[in-house]
Image 1 (spheres, rainbow, N blue to C red):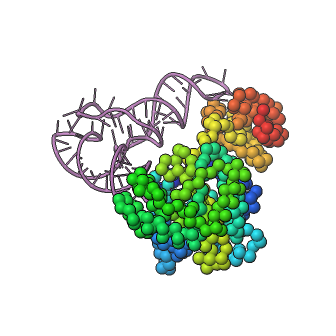
Image 2: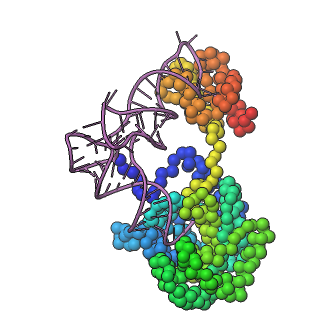
Image 3: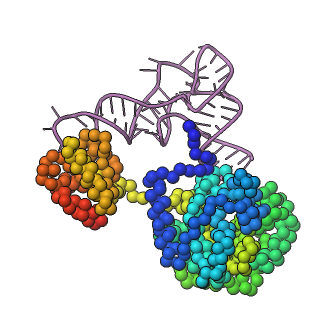
Length: 418
RNA sequence: GUGGGCGUAGCUCAGCUGGUGAGAGCACCGGGUUGUGGCCCCGGAGGUCGCGGGUUCAAAUCCCGUCGCUCACCCCA
């Protein structure tokens, strides 16, 4: 048997319906905040990601689905969205659009990693990108939007982690100081041994208690923020406070993409195992220029859809669908049911019937197991009288309704269940 | 890339100190007479015991390899 590729999951009912609900809710919130949808290719030139995410990052160094196409070009399945949003933004001259450019994008991303709980090779993100303003009010708004979406889909308990990485100016001084500190001490774990040379900031992320101990007294990024960055960060915290948003300052929140500047944030939830980040994001003020565009700032976030679905409370079981099942007895009734089936569908109702000549009992059983709201029963006597028996499966009430106006009355009842 | 756990019907699993024809629950199909679901009863279908090799008179049960799943590390959504 041919199976799905490692790390790629099939999404089946009823999960697909829950995904649709979540996406619908997200779209509604994006609309309120003034965002418009972008649908971009899954494949991009490899160079785009190498230049934006950073050639030394894990994503680029060892996690990309990269191959050469028949023409000999190196192409890559997108591992994240921001880089290509900026690419499309520049390619289509969207910088000329009025005001802050606000886009959202929902779709699959690909990273060649060893799968585990909450981590797949093809995973899905709900992305938000706002380009063209460095105002801290925008940072706060973006975070508010993220929390709004999460609340709207029913995710209750989350934790917002917040940090500021400062601008390149702040980072130069800080990194120098940090490296001095790191190389001044010995006994780091092999990973940190490597990190202190390649990406010193990441040492802060180490999970080893030993390394965390060694970090005691290490310089803190917050102390190195320049006046502008410090003011920017303070203003965001002030605004979040005003909007009653609980957050936790996490001076060690770094993030594995090189383009982040100033604000970074992450939302975590319990129940996800080791990969507990449901969403993450931050500001990327140098990225657009880095990719050959104007010196415009930007900020965004990504929600990990699989992780989000994982922590959402389960939907109430036993809920019946807005579905009708037509049951018939006899050939004449069968033909009438066939016609009625089409009429109901024309009226916008979801309707099914059995084509396989099952017994009435069997048809009723099917209706029940399909979670239909009601079974519409047609037999000889009903045909003679021009009516249908409608049995509501939840409470077994049964009524006779005129066939002529069946669609209308059923539609009304389904929309306002008694 | 590294390490641990696990691979028996569609699903969840039992069976594994090697030895009567490979099981249960759920799900699926049919039946319990004359036109009506959910409960109950009866019957049925469904499995190369992941795959390959080895030990043995005999392996789902032991050993090796391999593939896969899973959790964790690295890193991230």
